[in-house]
Every structure is written in structure tokens, then in C-alpha cells.
Image (cartoon, rainbow, N blue to C red; front, side, top):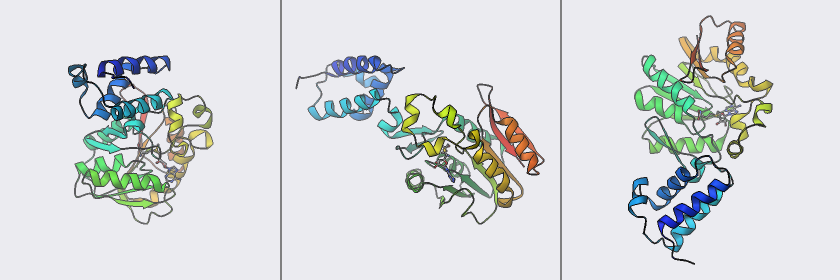
Length: 276
Ligand SMILES: C[S@@+](CC[C@H](N)C(=O)[O-])C[C@H]1O[C@@H](n2cnc3c(N)ncnc32)[C@H](O)[C@@H]1O
């Protein structure tokens, strides 16, 4: 095998990703190299003439090939940052999104400290972990139907020094108490929209993305049942798809909630429903 320098690898790899129609081939290559060599991106340029060992070349090559198959960078590297938490992800959990960060940031800035919170559909655990980090003496619970997700979320809670109670539950089935806040980012993509998504999305668990009833299933279930699990004056926060605000408002009214507020995100799209 040839003696390849960091510069050779950077150029070959980003050309390879460019040919595979990756949007940001150079950036993705730099992030893969810096992750697997455990250096920062600037160091790549400072170490241009460094000769890579065989095993370093193999690690980077395998990762670049995976990225060429459109595997999301976050799954290749296995780490994402969500607000101020470092979170481990793999293909059993959804990659946390900026829209969810926006919702949690909104909650942390606008709510006073609750005594108890349920993160329903927790996935990697990002919502529960962010809440517990800000409000350390709040009782935080997190639930998901996927045992694989619960296991990753537990690991993330531990890595972030947060004490969270996890429940493996189909929506509210195993929930047996009331909370001040219930926060949820449930699956909300319709089957039709799912079929038109970019290839990267197909690496994520379909059960974390797609909902029956044209994407509305989970909201309807949650709104029908949440009241029983909310303290008096308790609130429900839902992350919603941009086109679902009207359906949410109607469903909430049908279920006798009398205070419904929709918040837009930074792209001016309907993103959070706050329901009392
Ligand atoms: C959109 S992901 C959200 C993950 C995480 N809260 C986040 O915001 O990054 C939805 C999550 O709902 C879970 N889920 C799907 N169906 C469920 C059900 N019936 N009951 C509980 N959780 C469910 C999936 O396993 C997935 O982890």
C-alpha cells in the first residue's frame, strides 16, 4: 500500500464524496479525518505532510465509503451535540434535530422550574437530559417503545451525569403518575412524505419518523390521553410538523383543552404546540 499523506487522503476522499453527490464533500471528509485521527480540523492543515499508518488509512477509507453510501455523518462518527450535551447515537435512534433544540431552548427560557417532567418518545434521551441539566432537582422521566433507544438514552444520561428514570412504554401504557410538563417529539412524517426523503433519512429507524393517519396518529393519541397524566396547571409541549398546527388545534379543542398556543421556529414555520 502506498505511503499516503494526510493531504493525499483529504483530496482523494473529498473527490470520492463529490462524485457520490454528497453536498459538502470537503467538510464531511475533514470531520471524518479529524474524528478518526482524534485531531481538530485545523490540525489537518498543519499536518498535511504526515504519513498515515495502514490502520489510520483503513479507518478513514471505510468511513468515507460509508458516507458515499449516504450513511449520515452522525452515525459514522457516533456523536452529536445537542445544546450543551454530547450525545451518542447509532442507527437505533433518531439523530436529534435543530428543531428539537429550538423547542427545548424555548422551554428552558420560558418555563419556571417544574417539579416533574415526562419526555415521551425520548429516543437518544436528548430532551430529558437537557431538562435535567438545567433543573437538577426536577424529577425527570423518559419513555420510549424501543428498548434499543432506552438503552442508548440510559448510556447518554450516565455520560452526561443526569439522573433520569426510564420507562419502556407504548405511549402512556406504562405511565402511572402525573407530571407538571409532558414534552414530546413523536414520529410525525406521513408515509407519502417518507418515500420522498433524502437517502440519508433511510438509515434512521422508520418507527422514529413515520406515523399513520397521514402523520397525525401520535398527536391524536397523545392529545386524547395526556390530560390524565398532567397535574392541574400542567402543560403539554409537542414538536410539530410545519403543516400540522391546524390539526393540532382542532384535535386539542375536540379533547377539551382550552389553551393552545403555536410557536414558530427561526425559519418562521409552525414548530411547537403548547397545550393546557
Ligand atoms: C422523532 S423520534 C424523537 C426522538 C427524540 N425525542 C428526539 O427528539 O431526538 C420519536 C421516538 O418515538 C419512539 N416511538 C415510536 N412509537 C412509539 C410509541 N408507540 N410509544 C412510545 N415511543 C414511540 C421512537 O422509538 C423514537 O425514539
